[in-house]
Length: 358
Image (cartoon, rainbow, N blue to C red; front, side, top):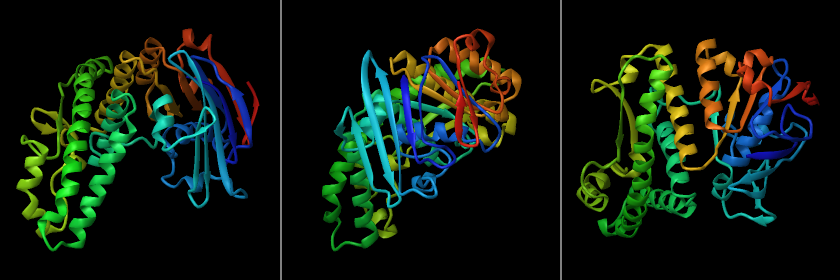
């Protein structure tokens, strides 16, 4: 839970600090007022990136050389201080409780964040990389934020791919990196599977709650078939050397949503796909709550993406989860928060980049 935020030099928002409530926090104002910039700041604090732009430097205020986000966070009864500073050259300074952090994972572990925004990926019909990112959010937090495991896999995969692209005198050049890919890859796969297995029953339940009377199946593909990873890498080594590209491995994992054995994206309407994506995120929120992660949920203008019925169902689930919610909208009514939750909500009014009242 975020108890306070201090934001400096983010585009569209004047330097500001604010105290947040434990349940629902809302920022309301006209389009372009700067509401979304608050949620971007939270995204940068947790993920190291904005959900609006892939380049953090584009989020820095026009006349500044860096942005800073500072947050006080309560996790499992312990208070933490998190800080991120990002420069236009992408130089980063990360701190946890006043001590320099080695990587973004140290902050993500303390501040798990989920997002439902107009920029959210379409995980059903989108790219495999989007679905891997979704699964790896769960795998990372299910592993208690084992950043070394995921960074080790990323480094080994990149190095092995570089060797393949560059060509080798011998296939033995691949051995050192194959061993690391196998070691880290099998461990990451185990956490990915644990997360997906926890997700499956909740996903089906939320499909029903959201009114989609269609049975769908989640199938997780490892990226290398039924063999062990070491065996699969060895079996495909000759093909990969010829292709100068990695053809199997954890970097090719995918989460498939099927309807009667066929991809759901080929059979569902746009509205049904939206419900399916929403069910995945709500299942993620619920599963995280069961594990005691207590993620913060960011909702950017939910009234623009969801009809009134779906919005009401989302707020019902959110209320039952007990999650802290940060939401934006043109009006409180458009955000759609239920009456019983509104009583304990904090409302911040944003105008021309300034938070003028709360």
